[in-house]
Image 1: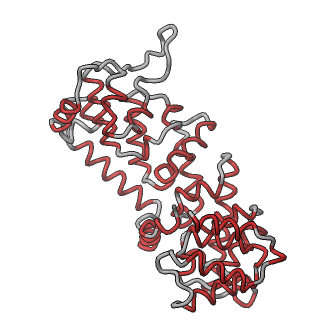
Image 2: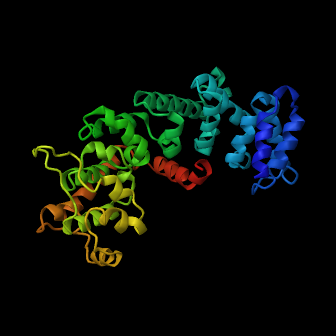
Image 3: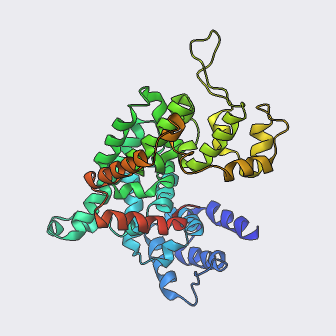
Length: 364
């Protein structure tokens, strides 16, 4: 579009030829089609943008693109010091490139930007809440970067899929990895597992996550490598079970037999196909290639309607005579886990809920 071409022209213009007024004027034109951004009717927005550019004119192209991607930066109650402070910290503190620093600006929860203030580091402020908030956010970002480096993950890209992680105490991240090694004993699988399922793997209660993994491993006989390499843990898990049961009862699901000569550890059809194929394509792309040439969408729908909640529980699959008691015990175990790990603390629940509510604002 014309606006995008104009945006690139501004971005590529030699900074020596650009004045603050030039940048503000160009930005006003570029932003006029963005809902809620209007420099003429909302002078506060122009003033904020002008203050930022006057202090960081060498980054003017990055700032224009950042606001283009995330207009909330001008609409939210930020100060120029807050926004510039985050970029300065990202570049000097986290040692990020310019482009990655501004990418961080586009994914970090809005309220955390306001809690990372450079002036809060001064000794005179050591006893106030601002210092504590600033210390928490900067420490969380530094720890997150270290965590990601350890598992060869891009800190900013991964944060984009799980921004709520910054509200969670750092020790929970490392404890979660420790819990996962019960199943993923080969640490080489952890990076792919997180990359494909960051929010589920790092934020979901472990009893619930454990039930999913155990169903995949003990009922579907999926190799842990295949679990790590797809997004199954982040999908509607009951839907995965329905598809598996349909394939299994139709004799189309191949459980691996490791002791057989020439056998593979991977079940077939693959977990990625079962979990990630869109509903409208499930029969044609998964069922038919597996041998179910005559099976139809209507037959699958009828099969699903006949399933009960007991059919979908792992316990019922393993033991047809089981009752709902085991599921009740699982639920109690999960509630106890949340309480034990501090997730019942109201402020943590509220912070995570707020971040999810505003998620669209920082993930495009």
